[in-house]
Amino acid sequence: MGWIKKLQTKGVIVKELGKKGEQLRAQWESTFADHISSQEKTSIYFE
Image (cartoon, rainbow, N blue to C red; front, side):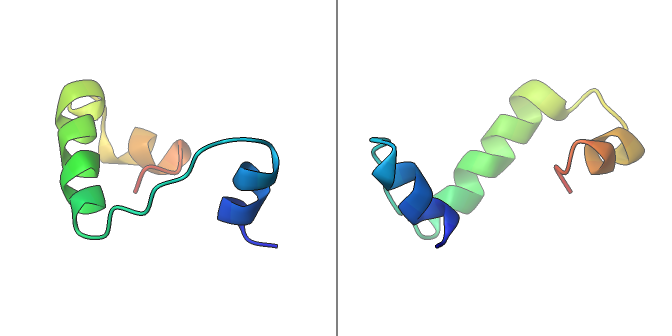
């Protein structure tokens, strides 16, 4: 079972965003993760 199905079975609403997901990820990174190093990003599975 994929992670999307697992979330849905737990009652989480999941929307697929297509190309919009890349834009949101870049926005999230610039807001919350811009100040951390590449090594730290790797350690939290961001990169």
